[in-house]
Length: 488
Image (spheres, rainbow, N blue to C red):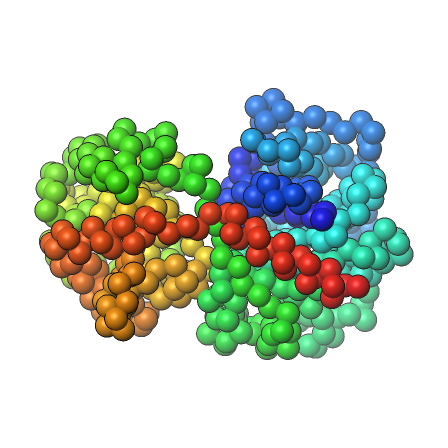
């Protein structure tokens, strides 16, 4: 089976969020299962060609691609994903991609990803490589399913190529003015109220992907059901419900080569299920780093997040006084909205010895917080998948989460499981999106921490679970087969 994986970010080349982790891991897991995968992504200015051993494809040379009536010179560079034979194809067009950021909100943001979408297809043509499935990821690739069936429908090479549209975050939909029809060379008759590319008088790349893809999936089972509802459907729930039988959910995996307390290169002390002593040492090391007094009988609560409403910081701020009055200490790592950054700066200043904050991004520190914390808090308003709660389970750090999306699929509430007679709870969770519900769940976790035997049981329940990419990749292969059958 041949899979083309179209993405705008991929570890280790470019990252803003979880999509990059998926793009850097899923193709490698698929390759190990015998799938031939080629990744396609833009060649951004900040990608280090020498470090990542990019090579120019002289056989293809220049590709001339038209966007908004102008012809642009496009080239192809190639590399291999680290520790694999997965080929990464970089679509190189300096006019659109030699900018400081992956996503810019510039006036030509639509044109940037129109060119990328066309570049993926034209690169496939010149490589003479007909994939069984093109996996498109989020709105930036939403035009590819339309292009395969319409603009490039003349090319018999793609007669049997199916498209899978993977939604990582439904809130970002790629909506542009009607003029985008001309820029993208989309037939005007496809744009009308309620039509396949129109949404609230705009051209929606997300809707286009949903309508024209052979199958659709999200990155957790729970989220695949949530986005069919008005609360989570971001205005497109009705369109998705019309295709309900074609919507699937596959939970993201995690890379245990990078996130494993037994081998983590960023940890001063390694540890495992059989010997958790290193975890306590990491906690002491982390707290000394932040000048917090160490107390093994008081839990340390960690948070690593974008500081935005989606991640629950509106309800955190509602309950901040009650939360910080608990017998616990806090370390927060993240950046985002100014008001939340300022809130944590203020708290760190006024609650010295109890709360510390690092405003920004720091990969090494994120590993230390996962290992050194006792509790990890993720109170998201919605969470398509989430990765940090899965990392936390592996690190014996008990997650407290809102029961939504991938958080609901991975974290089983200890008290709820016990109530129904089960013994495999691995964290704490709450339903209501409110500061009070958040506070009461954190309070339950803090109180349970005092019972060391129960706490260790919850830790081990989480640490023994397997969320590796192999399991997810096997499910994707089944989905590719279904998409292929639907295309035939």
